[in-house]
Image 1 (cartoon, rainbow, N blue to C red):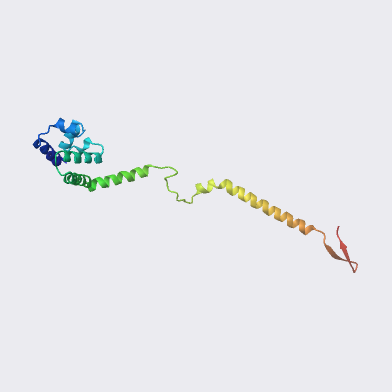
Image 2: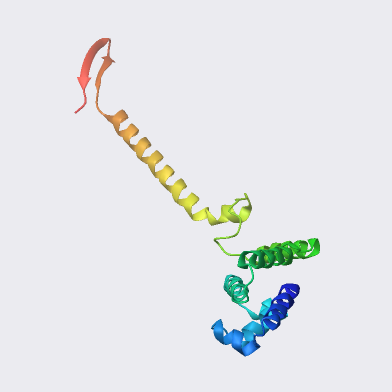
Length: 168
């Protein structure tokens, strides 16, 4: 960007335009024009706005704005695509460390492991289940015993005679 800024500065001076005059004609601040000519992109928050300023500045100076913007885009591509492998690995490591630190019921693993503690948590439920089963078994045995006690017609042999009695 520094080379592009110097090129724009040279063209401004060749056209006999002062810094303040260019800033006023472009509706920019003097600092904006100085930062563009110095290649200081960190002075601008919005890269797209900076790109538009460079386009308007190139038009103002009588240059082909598309060629100047292409140069600006090439600079941005070179500037942003040269991230070192060390920086990438360091960022990945920081991300992994942050993920390990974060523990909440919503982010921790939902994989269940069988252990005694989990069984002890179920202890009240197991007790209730056993009590219900015992109650059902007792009810079943009680009903069965009542059915077995119902009077039935029985044959009884008394002194060689066979008589039928019915229990009431």
